[in-house]
Amino acid sequence: MLKNIGIIGAGQMGCGIAHVSAAAGYRVHIYDLSQDRIESGLATINGNLARLVTNGKMTEEERKSTLSLITGSSDVNDLAPSDLVIEAATEDETVKRKIYTQVCPVLKPEALLATNTSSLSITRLAAATDRPERFMGIHFMNPVPVMKLVELVRGIATDEKTFSAAKEFVGTLEKTITVAEDFPAFIVNRILLPMINEAIYTLYEGVGTVDAIDTAMKLGANHPMGPLQLADFIGLDTCLSIMQVLHDGLADSKYRPCPLLVKYVEAGWLGRKSGRGFYDYRGEVPVPTR
Ligand SMILES: CC(=O)CC(=O)SCCNC(=O)CCNC(=O)[C@H](O)C(C)(C)COP(=O)(O)OP(=O)(O)OC[C@H]1O[C@@H](n2cnc3c(N)ncnc32)[C@H](O)[C@@H]1OP(=O)(O)O
Ligand SMILES: NC(=O)C1=CN([C@@H]2O[C@H](COP(=O)(O)OP(=O)(O)OC[C@H]3O[C@@H](n4cnc5c(N)ncnc54)[C@H](OP(=O)(O)O)[C@@H]3O)[C@@H](O)[C@H]2O)C=CC1
Image: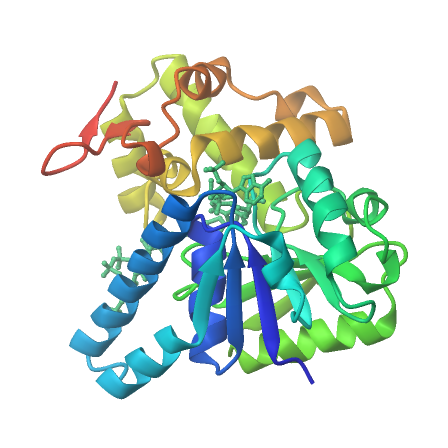
């Protein structure tokens, strides 16, 4: 029975996973390199919980007790009591491998380690840990408190006990599971990211403006967000990493990341999280940057 959940990375996904885990009654500890990141992550979680109270979906007591279950620190040793650690750090294989080297020696031998990676090989990441049989992909969708799906992905060495424990854990969060094989970007992102990349090519080639492309897909295909708005929401660095993994892993030119996506990332225009992407978020309302 899992009780203590460790989260690596106080970004949008780490905080979302912390939120839903604590709301389900788990004790949660968030580890990040930066104390500032942790503080702002905790403030975001508090804001999202407060909104649930305002909307009558959570009581004030539940908000307080949920928040009281979440701690955070920049000391990796604080992950030691974790029964399950979910790594939700930057989508970069080198970063994730380095994290596992630092975290594994701290963990109980029986602790499970999972990654929220959007695209990277679970088998290859598992090989960078001391516990490939107790390692797998638990892939939440953004925003975590709202989205119903979690993809579960086994690596070649993942044992059945680990898979069952992950399945049970996700079930307690009231999410629906799909199982994906360990192929680049799994199911959701294998389909979603080429669509987003194509929307960026559509912009790059001048077929339409940011506004035209997003309006077309919202009203013409009933998507809740336009593809460029969604790219900004996911993070353009994450979108680019996923496209690179698809391109490298499947060796097909149809996955070539759009040069305009590369340019935005090189500029540090990463979308909502950096204040600017296909839209500029620094004013009252988002304004298209093209
Ligand atoms: C990259 C990967 O590896 C995989 C991925 O995650 S891909 C991305 C998958 N996600 C999507 O495709 C999201 C697409 N967008 C949507 O579904 C919707 O636009 C949305 C749910 C994000 C917002 O919905 P909306 O109707 O436009 O806005 P809004 O009415 O403000 O929000 C709906 C609810 O979601 C909540 N919500 C919105 N954004 C939120 C956030 N970031 N965190 C927590 N809750 C949020 C709101 O509080 C609101 O809750 P109530 O119903 O209790 O009021
Ligand atoms: N964004 C999305 O829509 C989705 C993302 N994912 C996946 O979830 C993971 C996280 O994404 P997301 O939350 O969006 O990214 P963010 O950029 O919002 O957050 C990543 C966090 O990890 C931190 N971090 C970086 N390196 C380390 C390290 N060595 N040790 C501890 N923390 C570190 C970052 O700190 P700093 O900023 O200081 O570098 C940052 O706080 C990625 O693997 C991504 O692919 C999965 C589903 C959806």
